[in-house]
Length: 427
Image (cartoon, rainbow, N blue to C red; front, side, top):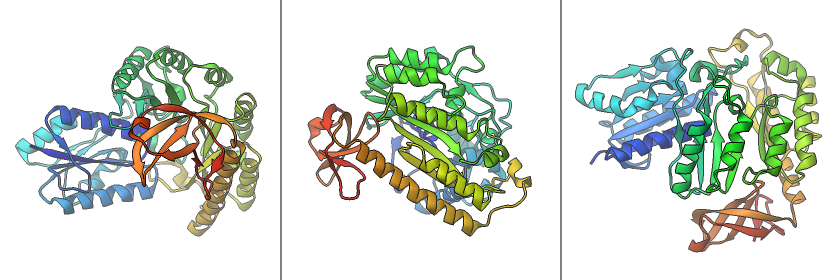
């Protein structure tokens, strides 16, 4: 029997697509293996957001080849899409597929078995219009549902439009049908994923709010989360709907990238910091216990000490629950290459450390704010040292003594005791 192992890097969308592909292989008779075990086929689903992500992809290829020099190694995803020529030179790589062709991976594996010749099927994705649905399928309690792909924004620092193509999405009907499939597999919570998810329906005459309303009617799913949505696409109508909906959680992830309008302009973002603040403050006003997270990049070309300090102060004054910090990494195909005044690497790292410390403090403040509330907690299946872990509706991590009956259930818990490191509540 043929064995297969997947290794996925990057965003939730990649994980949803890997899960979808793995399900197809299992249906064809393949047996899943851990990536660190010997397998007949290794699939590395790659990311190109940073140079570190690409390095992790190369390391995974070398590990697979070391584990089994005779294995078929397929490299797919964003790094493949933008750097196929570089990947085909790495020892052991047999199949290279871009983001529009990775959905034919099973056929390509069979083709390689017959021909024993390296396959490189990376094409220009800029005009791709077809949308490929995907959803996660595993033994976890939380599923990921892909509803959108690609991006039309072309921010100066970002390579994703070149790796994923233009914005496109499924229909509301298709999304609803996939949510029902996930419910039949006993998923209690579904996370909506995409590259620029708020752009849903842009080319089909539908829209993101209508999608949320339709999914909310799929009563077999207890909880939904929105993976990430741009501040200019997060309307008050969407926020109001989430507040009053049956199943959408008080949890928002809103990319900011910089708290300096000068830097945002250089990045060619679609908003200024005032619009971001307005959305955050509005959420906090009508949902005081909502978990609000953001992405922030530091060290972008031309970011001065003054602009960085302004960004930090801006973040300090907002009711954020967490900050995901990224150190700027120059991407080869982006317009940022031509921008002057690059920030020295050591300065970028120092600034990232400042923001990471702020992120830790923000999370602690948010957890302390929630002491004493009663929350609904979805318990995970994994047991660690006799303990079970779960997340509240507003995305607070909770710990409780493990019992098998607890797995994949939702219970009401009063959050009274924080762990010594203030990283979770103990019930």
